[in-house]
Amino acid sequence: QVQLVESGGGLVQPGGSLRLSCAASGFAFSGAFMRWARQAPGKELEWLSGIWGSGVVKTYADSVKDRFIISRDNTKDTLYLQLNDVRSEDTGVYYCSWGASRGQGTQVTVSA
Image (cartoon, rainbow, N blue to C red; front, side):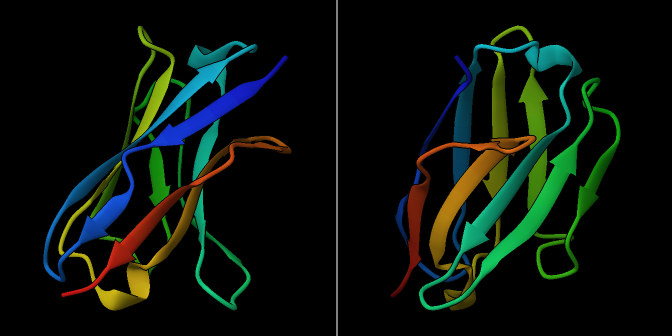
């Protein structure tokens, strides 16, 4: 079955960096369009970024463009999200997804 397991979250100071990972299994990862989203406390799920199978074409929400970088390693069936210059509003649970499937999420907390 499809499994998506996020990791790498934690506490980070404003202006800091963090790299999230999403280990995928149960489907053809190398051809899959993958996405990252987050849910801040009390807010709806917010789409952040997407990447096509080859890893060349990427899209970003305006809120994270120029700060976050999505990437993938098709040899490891793993999706990444590099968070740079984080802000308090980046706090939330981060999820990777493929179609309607989503992982359990990893918590990112931005605080001094």
